[in-house]
Image (cartoon, rainbow, N blue to C red; front, side):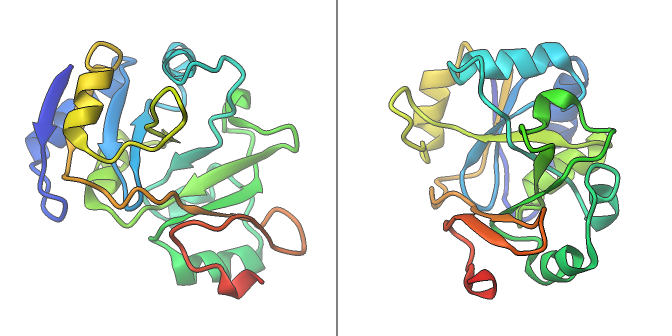
Length: 203
């Protein structure tokens, strides 16, 4: 595994470009977000998606969320109501995953049984730079150990996943609290998980 340490606010572009190169080749990366480290791949690469399932040791896992760089990009992958747009515009970038009706462009492997997808715009320049340079979203599933515990120390992550992923972009220890998950796919919002983001708007 290639391993690079990046500044969280001004990440070195050569390392971002290397991550993008690996993603385009069907590789798997670990990268920082505003909540936890994520395991990611290009959402349009079927073989890479299958590799992530293997790494997570769950062949049936729904890779619920993926990262978009901006709101314009979201509209390519999900149907966004006026209500959803207003709230997302207010809260993003930030530690939230919003569940929305899936658009046809999204691979079916990322759809839930309810034909929805989870979308994130994290408040972290490394994650955003990756998807900006790649030109399309990447999967966002948290880095955990075999017991399902979130890992926050990049050196511990490196030791565990060294032979499973192709590259890791490290940016120090992260908070380790996952994103709040808000379902905006229906008329009434539903808080699926209360995490790092304030959910008071929806309760």
